Image 1 (spheres, rainbow, N blue to C red):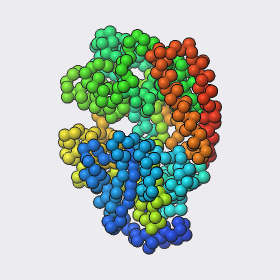
Image 2 (cartoon, one colour):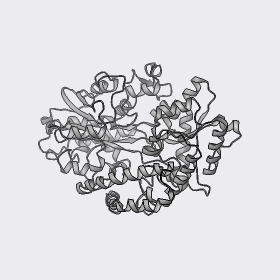
Image 3 (cartoon, rainbow, N blue to C red):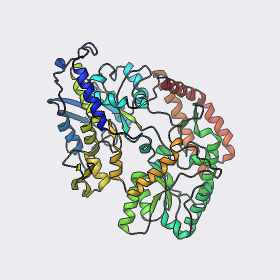
Image 4 (cartoon, one colour):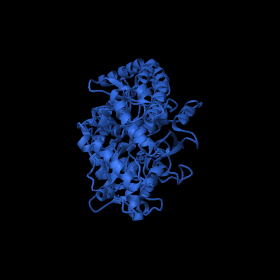
Length: 538
């Protein structure tokens, strides 16, 4: 699903030309060019005397090298590119994204732009008067964004409510599913070669590899816990399961929403994990291991087989090279069951879970300015800025006409990955389109090869099982689902750890399933099923 951004600009220019002479003055009450004081002719806009207040709870936060957004090259540069002043609002130290969002909502006046994981509740926020319905003006005042949404039905569907209202500006990955399947198994190939082992393909192969690495090198299977729970599912597909340890809903082959954690296949996966845990093959500290610790374990050869992201694999490859420790980290194909089963791998449709909405505190006479500012990211020039920073400063075109980072970035003492985050806003998420070229430029060839291996052979099972970002619930559904989900997710997550570690025997599995059912699972699945069916019907 890879797309070129350049042609979107052509559509944009056509739309601008067509719409310039046929503006619907009644589409948004009190909102006209003269009222907004904006005679838009392109970027930068001549609006330096105006200020947009812009809240983001987790996306495109300033790099940790900078104390404020004014010091950040990306954030200060965006003001210049847009031609408008921006007052940035981010979570204070020690406040997580949801806390910051709730505190922001409790304020007397909302920021003009709210960037948060609000997609599932967009209809409610519109009905409550928190965010604006942008439907009447999006085609006129955000033509590049509107043109992008029309390139894929899934894009357009995700950014509408069930009633058909456009509510925000999403995060999209240019290459679609390839970018979403950015996690997978990895192995130190040097050890495989030394032990005369082939690349492991099945769970039995993994069993042999893990035991051999422990016997010969004292190495355990280890990984950052968040990588196999919050973002990935590790070995699940080999068992026909859809979760490694955390609460996870999935879409089955009959388009029905199910809870992975009560399926018999999930039990089989837990049994294997308990076997490995009891044999001392899994790092007993794995629950507290983060990316930094996993990276240290890889560098110090405390593990030889793991699960991580493309970006982290790049770090491991670079660390091994700099330390000259002989490790050759490469990506592995997702393991299959001994019967050839591979039910799923982590993936999606190239649509993120965060979106930027325009609040109702944004006055009518500033609406066009705000919507033009958000539209910039989806124009050709804006896409380049959001991904790579300012041309001639952080990047320029190479001899082949492709973006290439300049020494300011490549020679940054904090390292390439960190430097890229200083100048662009799409590194992790944003209200923009993440360029595939960015991922190629920031990762090693080994990591790119790994991502190819994780995704392309497994594309058919990478996304069909996932609940799509953009599903929305009614206010009543959202409130009730949150109540049920919070109770069930906590219980099944804790139970999975207890099953793996042996604190609870799998002989009590049936009792566990009954307990989950008694917590209102059927009602929860019904709520999600209704939301999913409405999403498909949009």
